[in-house]
Length: 303
Image (cartoon, rainbow, N blue to C red; front, side, top):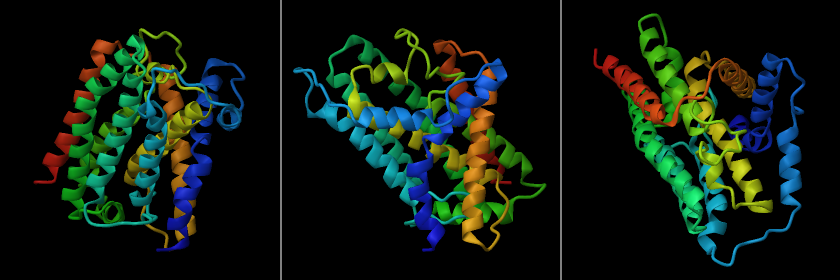
């Protein structure tokens, strides 16, 4: 364990709210407007964490626990997730499966918290979330299996350390297919355009946002913080595919990983600026396409 491995989860906690700020500023640039401040997410979190909570008399402890469980799952995911060529804080054999299950548990906590309110709108959003998860989670597992097969390792730290040595001209089709599949999953799991619009206020078209309509104050702060952390976690999976090999200086590798995440945020803003939102009926087809790309990358490892 080195200093960079310890700093990675801490930096994620502090810098994760910066990612949506970069996305929004990029979108504002393409739209020719000023847009919100770069640090707007920090101001929102500070405002929400200072407010008192109000709960419905029909909601149980499940509603209150949902945001906390989701954030706890993402913090645990950061502990087993490397950033680029920086090893994870607690790597072990099979941690890639644990990562997938932690993301699934966080989703489950958010869904049951939405259902606990008894609201028809939140139930509708929970239904959509689970429906799309049926396609997204297998695609993620297939992509992780492709990485494990290609690098001959069952630990994310070993996998992403081996990616740099394995990368080359012959491996380019593999990384192009897997990178495209992971990028689609990154947009879908974080409810970004073309799958969902995080800035919409139309309940009939929302997916994630409609599930948290009844959350407020501190609970909404944890919901937003969890969303920022999820951007970081899923972004780190994609960043590990594109960064060069380790420099031998862990802090430099950590800085390169953070810079790559900020670049991914800029790319996300560009995609959202030039792409229209997909109809809800087309979202499963998009996720199936991500699964097919990941499956093709897995097949290439058997050559």
